[in-house]
Length: 175
Image (cartoon, rainbow, N blue to C red; front, side, top):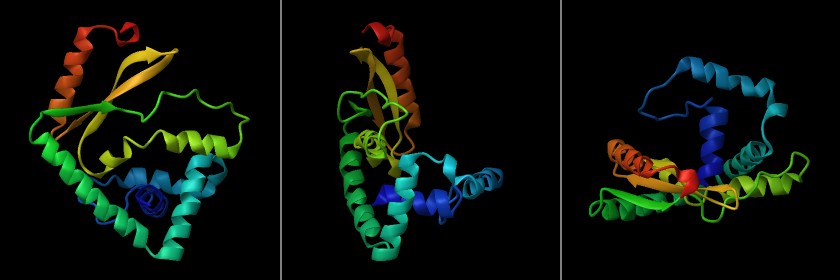
């Protein structure tokens, strides 16, 4: 609910500016993002599915599931914050599974969308405030393995330092 309704509201209705956001707004970016309405045939299948689902959820449920999901995310963030009170950073797998090959251009829409959404299970919880970054840390069957570093709120410096320290160990492609 957060992903599809939030995307619909923030990116599509708000032209990537959204509302009630306290950070920096870039009017030129918002002007550029508004052009999607004249070029919707160029949007990816996964983005179109998000748009349709987001619009459906907003029309049918008026934000009910979005609100419930945001309430759950507050609890999730509290748990991560508690863990981060004991550690400088958390190290987690970026993906909840082995990396998958990009589907061929002529694959079904369902496979295309499935591949897009199956990858966000571990990263989506950090769209709500805690800084996180992916660092490549190896290969499996020629595809990259990523480790995700998560820091305290406003703790970007620590995850950058941890990523830099890891990069100094050696070439991740041969680890």
